[in-house]
Length: 260
Image: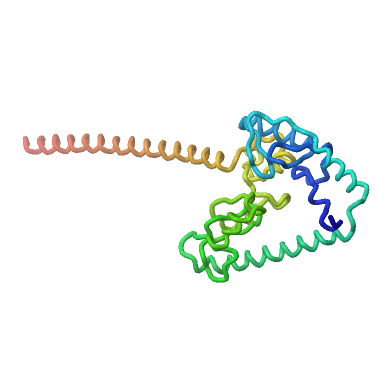
């Protein structure tokens, strides 16, 4: 295989974003530093009792045994000795730059298209004319209509991409530091964070999924609304009682006037 196809970024541990130290592979096939995935699973196990791959989100139960990836360890050692050519490094930089430009262009198109779509529909980033998206890809960082989503259902390389319901302004929900979707809420800092943040800056903090936080807020709001509704009913009951008393006094007053 030619040297330019092997880049340092291909071997980086998805958690620490550096060349893996003592690399291990988990059942889904992704590899990490042994310390990184161990720490990640320790935190995840304490929170919800399950273990997942930070890369593809596949879950495992019970906790898998970590197996050392000997071939990856040898490849990483070669990279550390400087086996990666400068041409290879420049190639990956150019590719990333082109992908970034394409993403910005798609976002600009989507902003213009969203004005013409009805309601809260999210525009497809590939259609030149406004068309509602049916899915948003967290890997491609783009939304697709039914037609442009087909490659994700037919091409092997795209089938593993994580698809979610159409989401607008996706860039606003991406961690500015790690570029991952902010799927967690740090209750200690009262802010949304990505999975990598929970293992770094927010390590040891009380973090829950955004869905769990949303459910909790909805429960709190429901309790407040219920309490306010009860108070309103109590006030209405008091007003009815006061009206009865007032009516009674009015009747008695009229009766006394008749007697005189």
